[in-house]
Amino acid sequence: MLAQVTTWWTILRICLEERLVYRGDFALGTLMRFLPIVTQVFLWAAVFEAARTTTIAGYSEPQMIAYYLLTMVSRAFSSMPSLAGGIARQIRSGELKKFLIQPIDMLGFLLLSRIAHKLVYYVVAAGPFALVFYIARGYFNGWPDATTLAAFALSLVLSFLLGFFLEATIGMLGFWFLEVSSLLFVYMLFSFFFSGHMFPIDILPGIWRTLVQVLPLQYLTYFPAAVFLGKIQGPELAWGLATQAGWVVAFIIASRVTFLAGVRRYSAYGG
Amino acid sequence: MPENFEPIPVTGGPSYLKVFLTFARNSLVRDMTFRSNFIIDAVTSIAWMAINLAFYVLVYRYTPAIGMPEPGLGDPGWGKYQFFVFIATTTIINSVVQAFFMPNAEEFSELIRTGGLDFALLKPIDTQFLISLQKIEWSALANFVFGSGLLAYSLWNLDYVPSLAQVLLYPVYIACGIAILYSLTIAMAAVAVWLGRNQSLYDFWFYLTNFSRYPMEIYSGTVGTPLRHVFTFLVPVLVVVNVPARLMAKPFEAQNWPLVLFALVATLASLLASRWLFQRAMISYRSASS
Image (cartoon, rainbow over all chains, first blue to last red):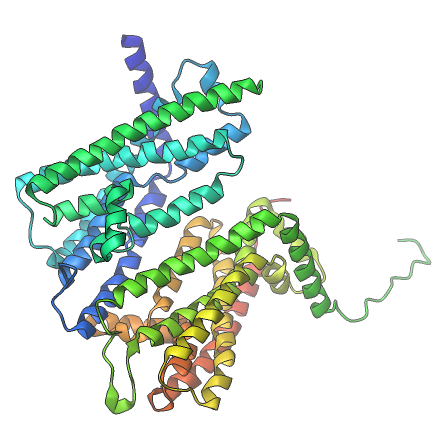
């Protein structure tokens, strides 16, 4: 037992050190990632002006900007760059073999490595994020109450897990398809539109709104932001968190099942 | 050298047109070899534009326009179909840049990294020409078709007909927009040579051109107006789409003729400035070793 804990700790430390090498990159890149929000600020200002209304789909102009800023936070948790692509690449190149031979679980290793990456990212990005949010504090109505904050924190952790296991499952498709990058691109497009990254999904009409409710994508970006803004309260909030957790469990299972099925298939080819 | 060695005189340079056609043909052959990839790339670029369009369809359910109209100046504002003309113009311009110049920009960073730029420099042809046009991504032109279709559809739905002058000037200013963006890629290539790294430069391209995807009127106020001036007069990305889009989408009375004239100046200045930058970069180039 102790040996296993020591192993995991070593893995985490190695990944942390690897990531820290690139910390200079992160700081500047983080600030630049906020630039598209600048254009969104101007765009929505022009929209609200011409619409001559104070709210659009329940969002006031400051709330709309606050929403976009908050999606940067939820995406800092749920976005998994190169996860699916990395898994597919490792399958294709045969690097996967090292996981099959050594007594290290691939998914566990990837999860720890991703946690390490995220931790370093948060440490380095905290400065730029704090700066931007301080400058933009006028768009917010102060801090929400303790319950909302706790729910927000929980939804962020869940969005990280959901993002990880969802993209890991997509990566596992590399066992069956040689070229996963096109599939990934389709997923990215869908995700961009339906996760709340591009706009708060409240502005979707009727049937599209219903479709999005059924998909897990909204829990990646939209849900934490909406929770913070107090758009989701009471029983609806509890239900939302439960559904989010449900999706996490579903994808933990899905990623494990596809991994085992994929390894069986892979070994069958004498790889 | 042996005593009776007579060097063969090199008369004239390469035919740039022939070289370009060779590049075009080679790239086309390559794209057609990987036909399914070609189709997938074409479909995904159209899908990306369709998603952007869908976003604005959503926005226009809540507002009649983006930015206020000025009836006194004959300006109907950026209503739904005016804005679609704007989007169509963005799509057309970006599809050409994506097809002809972006693949080479990516290739260029690799050339620097691997030292392959040395071989490019050795060739008896203008280096900027070589590194700008060597690789063409034909699938990106799918968006050119999509953008043209959207343009036709939007103009059909507008309740005014652009004058002949506007229609004739449109392709001219599309070309100007393409030229300005091209100059930007060359300037970035030059900076890449100096800095020696390229990834964040590529992001920079996205963030910079992001500003060009919106009507310049939205940049107003204490932060917006200086921003608009910087991106019109210093790095003229706002001129790229705004001038041709406005020419097509808005009536003759609503045109900003000084800006239209300035756009020509900006194009020329951008091309010259970027070429100068590039040549300076080539002089100070230290190879990674090849």
